[in-house]
Length: 348
Image (cartoon, rainbow, N blue to C red; front, side, top):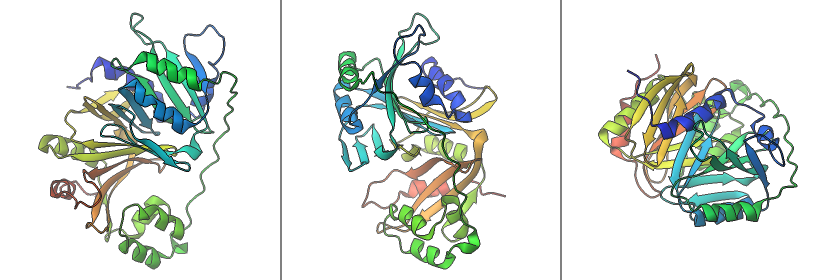
């Protein structure tokens, strides 16, 4: 029997279903509802410093932070605290709202009011941010416990009704260079010499290696392939054993992180799509299982011992989500996490 998530979550899932087809004009569609018109969905353009806007949200109390990509939605409820930036790279660091922000990709923002399916319910209110191609990078939703007056004050402070945001078509991604053109031995040597997981991005750039391509080039040494059912198994086992994990979901403008246990893991079929959901208080994850193309176990050396991630990619080669054992810098990886990963089914 299919278990249905709570009514409060169904609305979120309904809003995200079309996301799986990647509506590249979402930002333009929101922008079209700015100004005076008779449609129920209304949008107020926002401007100014995105950093200062996010810092101002602390006064609003608990809000729901939503970050998604083409196949996965990550929702966390909490207070936006400790928001800072160095140049165009920002952070939000609290127990609930944990974000990595890449403001160079933030092009437009709107305060959005949209009616729900229930006419008796108040309309949903949110702040929605998009890149130059109209793809959502981050969204912030008002919750029952939010301070609405403070939220209104943020909207009023950053409203720029005259902002005429224009979106362009995203160029096709450049194909990765052939494996034969990569210095595979040098790449593997650099991988083996990592002292921190954050060095990985720099290494792939230095050798001109696409992420999955890099996993292939060191397969059997630092990586192994998993079956597509591995993510469901991972979440179910983590929930049953109470193992705290980290769940990363991101796009070009934002990465959102959950750290802690997962408890209610709910597979669901709806609208011809197969979802695996985490439906916990304060944290929801919605991942399109039927879009999983590859899953990898990835080991990276660090000064604290090797760190293991499980990473899923969709059929377009985009990273859907990454999973780690819960840990902080300076701590060794949890043995319960390693035990979970060791039992995940490999690719046949």
